[in-house]
Each structure stands twice: as C-alpha cells, then as structure tokens.
Image 1: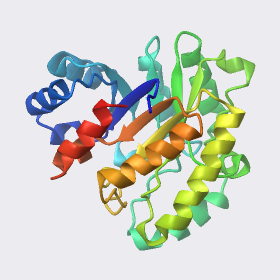
Image 2: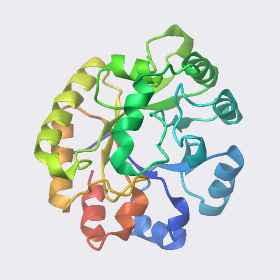
Image 3: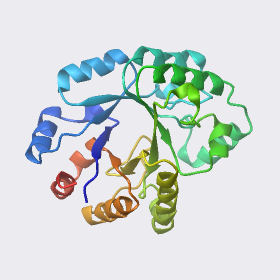
Image 4: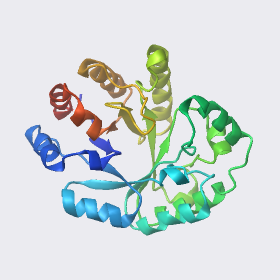
Length: 265
C-alpha cells in the first residue's frame, strides 16, 4: 500500500511543540507537506521561518468572519486571498462557522439555504486570479453539487477560468459522526469511488485523529481502524491523502502505532 503523497493538516499550530514534533517525524522518516492554518501571508512566512518544514498555507478567516470562505463571506475578506498570489495554497471553502450553540446549527444552515450567497461570483473570480500563476487546492464534501452552489461553495475545476490549476480535496472523514459511523463510512466509500472515477487527481482528506474546530468531531479509536480506511481508499485508486491532523495525532497516547503505519505508506 503506497500512496503517491501522504501529508498532514495542522489547524492549531500553536498547540504543537515543533521541536519535539520534528524529532518524531525524523524518527519515522516522514517528510510530509504540512497544510498549516493561517489568516495572513505574514503569519505563514513567520511559521515557515520558525518551523523550517515543508509548509503550505491553509487559508482561513477569523471566527468572527465565518472562519471558512464562501459566497456569504464579505468581499473584503475574500480579497485577502490576493496576498497569496504566486503561492500554492489550500482554501477551505465551506458554509460559515456559526457563532451559536452547536445544537442550533441546523437552524443556521436552514437560514443559509433561504438566503442568497451574494458574493459567490466574486469568490470564484478571486480564486480564478490565484489559479493564473499556481495550483489552488479547494475543499469539497461528498454531497450534491447543487447544494454547494446554493451555499456559494462549489468550484468547478473544469471551467476555463481556473487554468487547469484547481485541485479538489474531498473530505472523507469517516469518523466525523460517531453515532452513525458504520453507515457514514459506507457512504464515504461510495462517494470516494465516484469522485475518483470522475477525477483521478482528487486528493482525500482522511481522519480524524482528534477533534476539529467544533470540538465534538469523532476520531479514530485505533490505528487498525485508520488502516482499514487507508486500505479501502487505496483499492479505490486514491493517490494522495492528507491526514487530519498533525496536532491531533501528536496528542494521542497511541501515536507511535499511527506513525509506524504512516511511515510505511
């Protein structure tokens, strides 16, 4: 089982001891790209200078501005992407992160559906500008494109405006919903097969090793569960995976077992 690329997400870089993290990566001879969450180019360059690893900007917004990019983002926020021109970046395109109790999230998303993502055309225009000079990775999830268009978060890589420089990163987080893990895993496998047949260059975001921004996401119970996913994705002809997340893995008591597995991918 050998993937072409095995990389990591790092959403909370300030939670890592980078010296000890580099020692672990060196121990297992792992030299991944690390997609590191940043708000500005300056922040990214500071991390790059300090950490001295193979970093790629994972561009996000402040929580107060929705955290993720979408057609609901303000034009001023979307324009911040321009500072990353001439750089390979990952843009997290999702509905805005609600600033309300998690139990009320469904009502918030219903509100989004009832309103127009008025800055969706502007978002696509800005991403097209970035794609003129470099590769741009954008997120996607295994649901119908019609839903994403309505939410102002669908980017079609086949459009000429993107210069064949859009790389889709499909969220294939089988552990996301612990209460329906079996059904959701089967659904993810089905969608991964369909997406890879549609676009063999699609990257897969796999996980989770620990909770994300919401704080309640499910994670792998063991490295055996993780290995099962990887074996299935490999059979589905997935070539590139990005593991969520480096800091989540470092915090695990059983991290050595995971790193041993990853070192042989």
